[in-house]
Length: 389
Image (cartoon, rainbow, N blue to C red; front, side):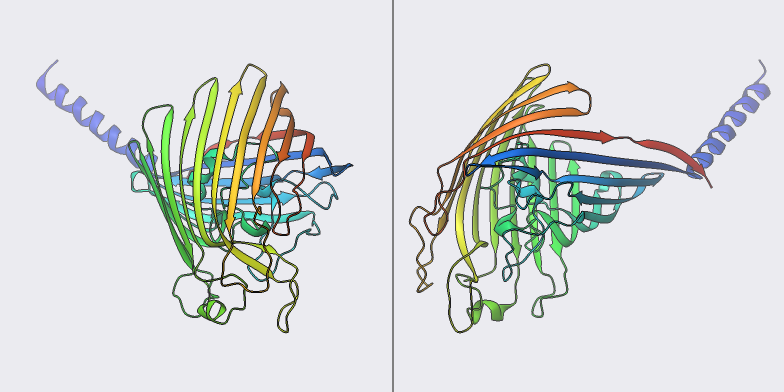
């Protein structure tokens, strides 16, 4: 082959590469993933049996990618299929605030769980904004592995809420940045709800996780929510002495046969409970308290079965500054949890879980022992296509 022919072929290959690259830049990769998880069970407690909802949901994730940049969106709705007045799954809580506590919420057919938009910058991280899972839960989710119980000592879903207002669970009006550099993952979060007249932002948080190897990870998280200073200074909320603040540290081990997780938390002014208290300004208000928590979970996995066990301990600290309120010295959550999962076919799971509670509420009444027997159907499908511009 002559030199001129070689040069000509080289030019053709170069032009072909440029054209191919240009064509790839002129297409958009579109990914759409609808999903649903339908869950319900029979619960036996206090000598009654009740059909209960178990945080069913349906959602849609969208990803539009061109080159190395992707634009993302997601929405998730809670579906309440049954009319039961109570649920023992704290993940199914709806949002509320420090002033209003609804112990038994009248369930609507649909409720808002998640809704967000964002930009994925590949190796430079991902920014999302809206109602979304918080960076605090990046760590507290280590031990939230049960189908019904668990998560009651992590200070994620405090006061019977979804953790939206304080930014610990499904954070309201949040802007979150997440990234991963090799074995290190980190996240940063701010909340901007526009309702706090003396702060530019309404809360912030951070999380950091390190993968020690393919099986073991450790993590820590911090979250602080700002509330109007006059609510603290004027004692409008009993027990509130500062801005709600949360700390968590945890570790997890995952393998083909075993999962094992530990979590410890400390929260200040971050949880609350309704109390019986009357004054000129307040009738049956909420009482805010500090607490320490500990969770442990073990899961043993077989072919079609899984066996679960765990323990939740959540110890509130009564505040001396609150007068005329009697808080039982044994006020705490202390739950021993056992469970069994069976997978008869793909997408279908049958489960049973038992909660044996040794805890008491603020008035000294023993918390409920509960047995559940239920079913869960998880369906999802991802659709991918290319759109030429």
